[in-house]
Image (cartoon, rainbow, N blue to C red):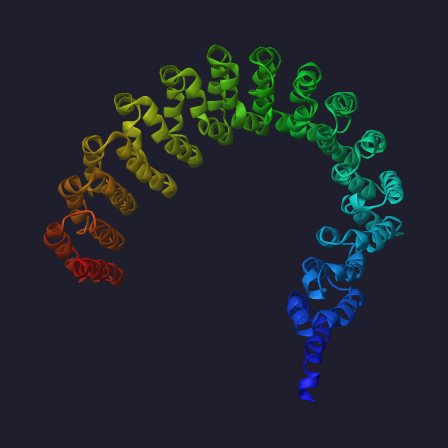
Length: 590
């Protein structure tokens, strides 16, 4: 009897937990649906579990979301694709709930199941479901229906295809803006499955209606449709049907629609091709760059380099560059920041002469901007300009501004400069670097912000790799002694930075310089009065063990560690003993 009752147990537990007052128990139960389905077997899952789930969908949104997600991967548990249609019923109900994320997940799961179903099942089960949702009394059903047409349309017979196009057209004219929004956002996916003749007539008619919708939230979604439909249409049809819409949208009364056009403009240009872009879209883009709304100018400014790449240098200089000059002194810091993040990319497009004459003054004004984000965005892209104008001109015009920014009051700006230094060093060469930037690199080791000191230590390592150990021995090592001395720097955190720098430099410098120059610095630091310094000395000594000779380990490193292992501080003793064990391990393995 017990053996006979056992399969009933999982479904009983599920029912109990699904009706429990505790939402977490109900959620856990839903998450375990696949386990329960395996226990029940395919037939009982179809006949008992799925009907039960279809009836019990009046629950918290979190539980319904989990259910919609689980059902999307449930095809194997109901007996494969031939029985996949049984999953449509609970998901159809979930497509009608009020919570948007539940509906979206249910539509996503239906699409996943529909893409696996056989054509005959799509016609017999899925198309009727789409038609029921599209005719739903409550708007939520109609919203969900819009996302399913692209799944069923290719499998539908000719007569049903006509009906589906008619239904979609009705959804695009629905009284509820939410339904029209959903229809507009899914139009591209549906259009991709429709035959070209119907695409040119039916779908384009639907699209044109959406572009004239009185709700800006519908029109802005139609902007996305421009790019999607443009890729499906022949070039001449695209220019005839899509281009006028884009131009009109760029002058739309709603700033949100204009923002969308500015954001999507590069994709729209790709859709219509280079020639119409030059003749029709350049004036539209110039209007967007000079728009009244800052948000539109931000979106347009962020695309300026991409847009210039489509044009030749002459057009860019004639039409786009004057707008760029205006934007560089825009009243909105966010517009200037968006411009600063991409303006460097214009240099290769415009060429050397135009960059020197026209862009360099803009770069310099943005480098001196009062807002750190603007300065930061310019710094991070300097290498793009260097490739065009060469290092001599870059150093003459931009280097004074870079040196000034190296002492900027905003630490993120200083950090960006540090990260750019190795690249600058490789381009400037060792002599020029020593004259202009060498002192700065050591100065950063004593910055008040830890992230700057840490980056400065890593910077020294990268510079040593670039200029070689000899250069590092002349320019870095003497400075480390000064910082470590108590008299010159009483704060232990700065001394700790030097230890960190030594641990990074040692592998680059090699055994000889490490033993003669770096190791004495570390041994001296082991006498420091601050425990944090001493246990960091132990860590650094441990990292030096593989780099130096065994004789140096025994003569210098081990005695120092033994002394530290007897320190009053527990952490110092711990790290010292750890390092000693590391020495013993190396000796045993050798």
